[in-house]
Length: 215
Ligand code: 13P
Image (cartoon, rainbow, N blue to C red; front, side, top):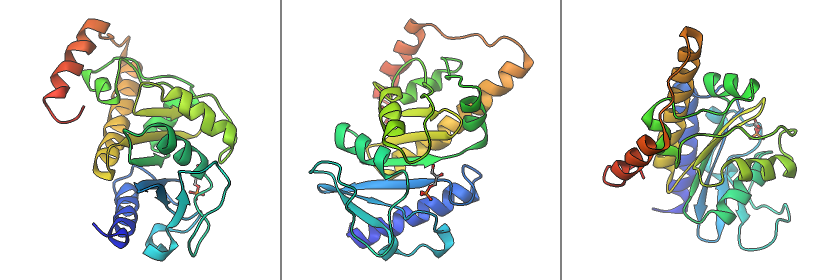
């Protein structure tokens, strides 16, 4: 796939993210690894007006300098995209959004426990919620990295969520599954005391997922 096609795929995924209700306005951003760099959506440009040349390119092989190439400045959240792609070679795509249910739990600073076996799609028996720091800061990037340790997603306190994947399709799939899980957990909390699966039950799911293609 050419770099131009990847740039277009990022824009298409952003449009899909908003039309599906996963995100609204320009609150989300998406990055994809290409070679030793990452491509990332521009800051504050409505997705309908984003063109492939506006997708910024940032080097992942050097230290974090803030340098970028392109016709528009990168997302204000480039730091956490950069840190995750730099330090987690298993991921090549990152989706950040402010989905309603993930963000509701993040406002309550609640992690998502093993309320459904699908929690295993994120690598373990929960999805953690990071601490709070202002959007775009390096401190937020550090907190996000730590909340994602051993996991492929996290909630961001009073902010939203991050989902990662081996490619953009996988990262988008996880973003949708995470919002579904957040909604189910939230609804269960309204109705009573959710029953939480134990470690053995989640380990069994993790084993089954290896043959299912979502591991
Ligand atoms: P950008 O428009 O800079 O990508 O920022 C959106 C956002 O919500 C930051 O969390």
